[in-house]
Amino acid sequence: MLLYRGVNKELYKENKGELRPKGTQFRSHLYPSKYLFPSDRLIIGESEQNAAIYHQIGGQSDAGISTTPILKRAEYYATHFYNAANGLLTPTDGIVYVIDRSKLDKFEVEQWVASELVESPKAPEDEEVILVAKDRGNLPKAIVVKTRKVAP
Image 1: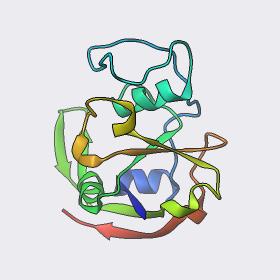
Image 2: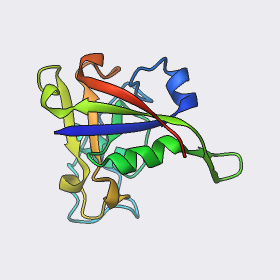
Image 3: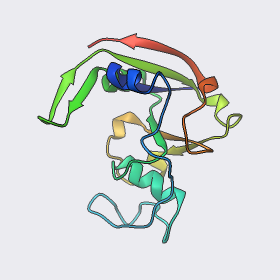
Image 4: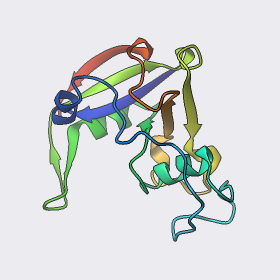
C-alpha cells in the first residue's frame, strides 16, 4: 500500500527534498479544546497518542509528517500554497512523494491513523496517516518510492 505527501515547490526546495518535520518532539499533554470530543482517544498526562491527536487538528509543530493514502489529496496540498499574509490559497507547482507503507516498520517509522484517534478528523477526506521517525527527525529516504512533479 502507498501513502502520499504533497508539498509545494518552495517547501521542497527549502527542505532539500527531504521529508522534514516542523519540530523534533512527539509527546503532548492533555489539553481539552473545542476541537476534541469525549470519545477522542486522549490520554491523561503526556503521551505520543495525544501528540498525534493534536497534530491532526493542527495544534502544534512536532515530529509528525502528514500523509494520505489518496493521491488526489496529496496533489491538492502540493498545488495549493496557503499564504498566511493574506489568508488565501495560491496555486503553485509542487511535488508528491510516493511512500511505500510496507517499509515503515523496517525503517522504524511510526504510523498514527487520524480516524482511529479522533471522532471527527479535521479533514476526513484526507484519511490522514501521521508518520514519525524513531529519532524524531527526517523520514528515511528509503521509504520513498519516487517523487513526481505536479501542477495546478
